[in-house]
Image 1 (cartoon, rainbow, N blue to C red):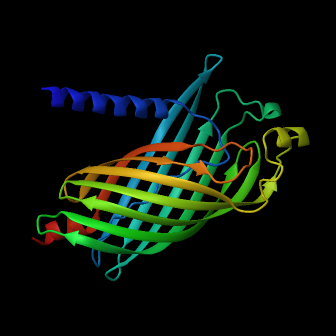
Image 2: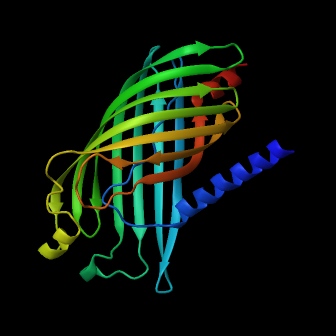
Image 3: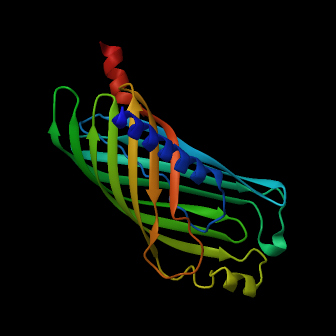
Amino acid sequence: MMKTNKRIHLITLVFTVSILLLASCSRYYYQPNAVSMPMLKDKNDANLAVNGRLGTGSADNNRDYSSVFNFHGAYSPVKYLGLMTTLSTYNYSMANEDPSTGDVDAYAMLFEGGVGGYYPIFERSNGLALIADTYVGYGGGRLNSDVNMRFNRTFIQPGIHLRFSFVDVGIALRYSGIKYTNFDANGMSEEYIENQGLTNITDGRKSFFEPAFTIRGGYKFIKGQFQIVGATPMHEDKWKSNKSLVTFGVFFSIDELMKLKSK
């Protein structure tokens, strides 16, 4: 009974923290997107994932909205080789815009691809497998808000994953380097740009350490997914970045579905 109560308390705590993270929405010049976790383990493995989150916030009896959506795809053309791609979008909608103060709607998108290798450390006939992988990738996108910018991002992502028949758990340690270009002040004053810490935002590549924890549960070819990603800046710039992202979504294993259909 005590163990059951402890589990209930733990689940309640995780749920409460997740809701608190989802319930707020703010504008940032960078926030991590969901980390792609292919968890490939054999040739012709292929999967798709869709995840995201919705957020709300209020000020002066007005309600603002934000949304994040991520679309992931992965495929292994030959054993030990993995390919993956991601499209991420971010929207922030304000109830009352005020361009003079920079309080305006925001939109950002990122498209990137990666290539890497995976290695099953062990694999059992009952579906249990421990897999190590590392991916490197590159992508680009844009941000339109109080200021407008384009950017590109490089990343390296080592990870380790435990796969069961109905549950998957994975940890990835992504290191991202983002480079901003084509900075457009969008009519904002020099004083505003300086106060936001944006004066030198296009100088050099900004680095972030982004660990991610992912858990999936469901049937073999379709599983619900929960992920939390952290983002620790490895630079000293003063512009705002979001330090975490929580997403919920669905994971589809195309190869598992094809195996079921062929039986």
